[in-house]
Image (cartoon, rainbow, N blue to C red; front, side, top):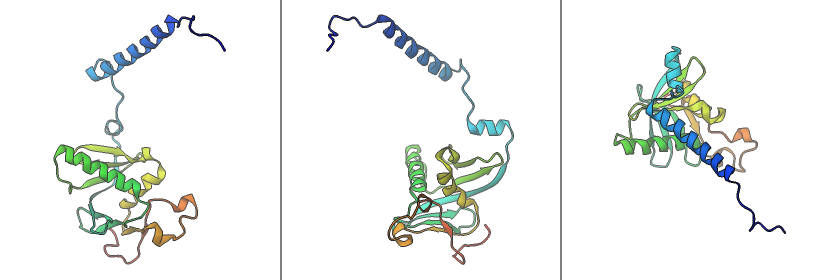
Length: 192
């Protein structure tokens, strides 16, 4: 075994670490103060490049008494999505919980509509007009993006509980998604 008691820690390592921390702090405070330009956000880039809207719908999300999450078209009042209790719909539920928490912090109504927008550049966004929060849904992966993208298509989607769909669990990873199926003849099905 070697004895480190008599060895000195190199001073240059501390000076280098302090320099890195100092530069990082200067950059952060420079951006915050407006001295160093910040990178534009995705919404700013879309506005600057005049990227158009392909499709847009407003939805109101609410919990049903049995624990299901219901998405209703804000303009027509028709149900667009039902996430049954026990369904693999964690992404949509998690996003909506986060938005409800933010609404509480801003002291605005929980029941305001949110806007899902498909952009010409392929981006999909979820905007809460009551708080100004915008989520770029593509940054969460294609499966999670598809969970919200399905709302832009007409018809009623129902995501059944996993126990109802597959009593023995999912057969493959593709079976374990949040994307629902269109229920033919369901109430509110048809063009929106």
